[in-house]
Length: 134
Image 1 (spheres, rainbow, N blue to C red):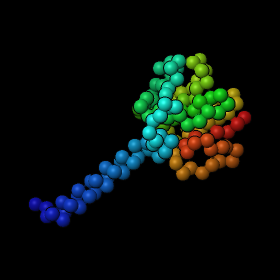
Image 2 (image 1 turned 45 degrees about the vertical axis):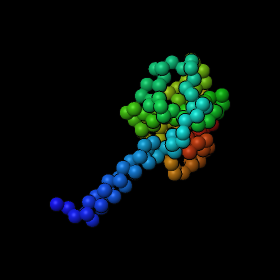
Image 3 (image 1 turned 90 degrees about the vertical axis):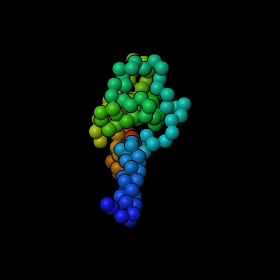
Image 4 (image 1 turned 180 degrees about the vertical axis):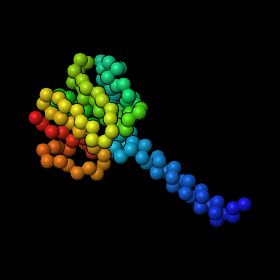
C-alpha cells in the first residue's frame, strides 16, 4: 500500500498532466483559445459541406482581408481548419496539419502554430495566420 506522500505525488502528477492537456486543447493555435463572440458566427448562406471536418463549436473569426473573411477552427480529424469566405458561392474550406496553406487569386494564406517566426514576404494577420499578397 502506498503511503500518503506517494499518493499525494501521484495526485499532483495526474493534476499537472490534466492541466497540460486542457491548455493544449487548441494545439498551439491561440487564435482559437478566446471565448466565442457574435463575430465568430458562421455565415448563414455558407453550405454546410464547406465545413466538412471542422469542429463547428471552435470556429473563430480572425480577420477580413480583401473582402474575404478568414476563420480558424479545430478539425475533427486534423489539427486545424481554415475557412476563407467571400460569399455563398465563393469560399474555400480545408483542414490539415501544421503549415497548411490556401491560395486565392489575390493572396495566399498559411496557418502556423504559436511562436512561428514570420517569413519574408508574408504578413501576420493573427497569431496563427500569415498572408502573402500576389
